[in-house]
Image: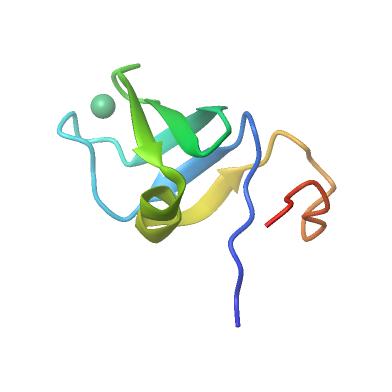
Length: 76
Ligand SMILES: [Zn+2]
């Protein structure tokens, strides 16, 4: 069972490309909804957390470098 972990400032790869052609998104707000910003065109969108977790493929760059695998600040 693999659990996806991500944090504020992380750059993630999505399963689907944005219309601009990029599939990299930066997490700029955490909460019940996640706000992500397209790395390619800087367009930001608000998506429900469940949908975001379903659509993200992996974290490309973690803002908290070196803390990979320790998702201690996630209450759920
Ligand atoms: Zn875009």
